[in-house]
Length: 231
Image (cartoon, rainbow, N blue to C red; front, side, top):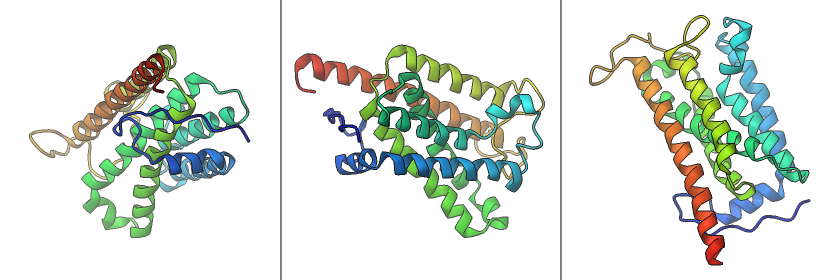
């Protein structure tokens, strides 16, 4: 197994996961990879057969539909590449963005439409989706240990998830918007004059901005600590 990278002494808001949890995940990196691959397989099944959304979408737009399983696949790739001694920064950045954004966005949507989901969905599945997605946030905050988030890599992640925002909520290119199916009509009024689509889109936009800020802040703080000899 690879030697664990040292933990930079970052502020808690940039590295909120306890170092013991980070170390546990990296020491058992192949188990983490396997769990992510199982989650990816379940996610594709869920989009294809539970909601049917993937099969109802033109094939050309499939890469932009199963967002959460794509994020866990990216995480599996990032951790596996690091474990094999060939870490790829662009892959780390994509995995960080995907797991942070979808790890928060899905629980947000589940809470916003809780009454609708719980009217037809088994409570066990609801809770599984809620907490399994929050665990994606935890692993996003472990990825900083194996990445320096160089600007080019962050640029790749911003470009991909920026395009994802566009086709999910604003300009679908082919067919309808490609965001995850929500249990209310997109035009249904919610709060302050916002529609259901406005609410879920706002959450995704804010989380993409958050991922951009955090990745660049982590890079900046790491450089600052290393230049001062306090890394």
